[in-house]
Image 1 (cartoon, rainbow, N blue to C red):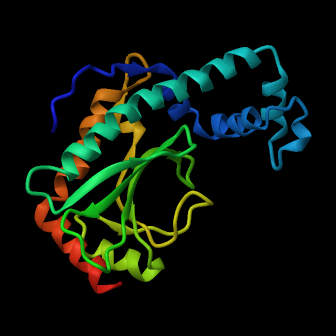
Image 2: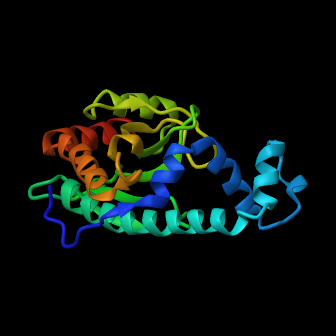
Length: 226
């Protein structure tokens, strides 16, 4: 793992969200709606709507905003890791961060260092989101043009990968998922906080498994499927 310049510390807000994911996910929808009229948000449980409109409204907003801020701190480290680990010495690929308008996601574009006429970029995404089981996870996925066929082929090349399926608008069908780390794995029991440095170590390990041999196979696969 690359040596971190500064410790990230703990996130109580992300810890609270992780332990109360179904309720916090629903409350976040109301927060994003930025509308006191809860009728405008579909499928919101009546009890959640009451909590949102109640006397703890300001506390809920504070948790959400602190969680977003802590996620952004973490993603600062994540950007360093993806560039340093996958773009390591003698790596066949180079990486450049792409701007995305999402508080819970960062994206790096990965391209072969030695260009080929048929090359297309691979998109490496790192995101914090809830699974269909309402568990908060740090996802790491690789996507490239080619749909499910390409995603399945990449999953056969990348270590510990599985073929991603569509998970809403921000999850590309055909992604190969190389990491799905539950934030509960990094909870500090005494405080209920997420240890962001421990989470960064887990993320680094995901990238380390994709060594230069694996990355070269991925580059070759991309050219084969072009």
